[in-house]
Length: 161
Image (tube, rainbow, N blue to C red; front, side, top):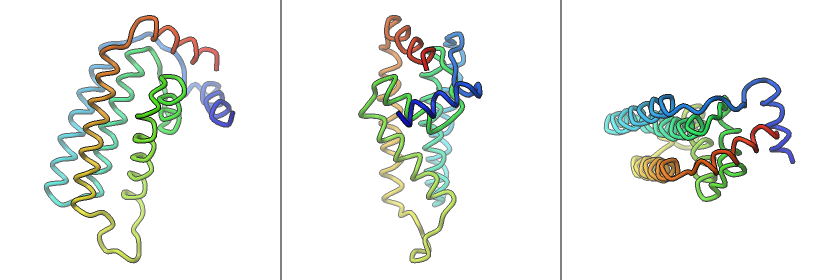
């Protein structure tokens, strides 16, 4: 119920709504996602692991936005995007991956643990980049096979919030 209240509040604020589906905007977000993946690998190779995680997260987020716009949904909140993946799109396996990555991105980008000079190891970062790429591939697979009926169902759920 707490999630539904949160989504309802965002809808009242105009931060969550149905819009005309746009394959063009969806494609633009997929291109943006790919650029973030390229940037993540570049900063990883430069040894800047926290920024690599941030770029990898944004590659995931942009893929999520591609899915949303493909279906005609505008969502301007990262936490709400995670909720929508789970509760509206029924992507229960991808939801925890996205949610954890969102938290890890925030932790690595904004916080430094006092006991470690390097908060994220090279190997941990490499694993996270692999997870992000798998997430994007799985979500893209879902996007490519979504039906018109499923899109209509999803839009009805958003409209009913």
